[in-house]
Length: 122
Length: 107
Image (cartoon, rainbow over all chains, first blue to last red; front, side, top):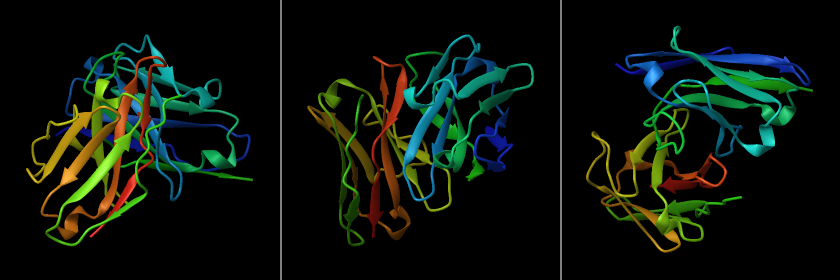
C-alpha cells in the first residue's frame, strides 16, 4: 500500500525554524517527484514546493522562496521541508504528496499524507 | 500569476446534479485536476486530466474543460459528496502548481 507519513510539526515561535519530514512507503520513491501543500485554518489549499525525482530540481511558490527549502533522501525514502523565519501566517497543516511525474512539467498529485500541523506563535 | 476562480459554495439537494466550475483565461488549453476534501481529511483526487476518473471514484463524477472554464459535475448527489472541491493546474510559465479557490458543496 502506498503511504506517506508526515512528521515534525508542532508549536514554534515566530522567527523560528522547523524541519518537516515525510516518510514514503509502498512505491519506488526515487521514481517520482514530490510536493508539499499547506492549508491554513479554515482556508484553501496552497501548493508550497516541489522537487524532482532525483532531487536535482526544486520548485517553489514565489512568496516562500528564500525561507523554505525542499530536499529529499532517496536512500531513506524521505522528503523534507526546512522552514526558516517562520511567521504567524505560516500556521497550517502541511501535506506531502506524490506526483505522477518525475520532473517538470508535473502531472498531478495522486497520493497524499494525512498532514502535520505547524503552529507559529507570536 | 495564474488565478483559478471557483464559486465559494454550491448547494444541491440529494439526487440532483452539482456543477462546480474553475475559471481562468484559456483553461481549456491546460490539464485540470480535481480534488475532494472532506472535513478533517487529506484531499483525494476525483478527476484527472480534466475528464479521467481514478479507480474507485463513482461514475457520477464527470469532468469537462473548454474555453475559459473547466467543470466538475456530480450527478445524483449523495450526502457523502458533501465536501470542499479544488481544481489544480500546473503552470508551465512559473513551474508552479496552482489550486483553485475552492468550492464547498453542501447537500
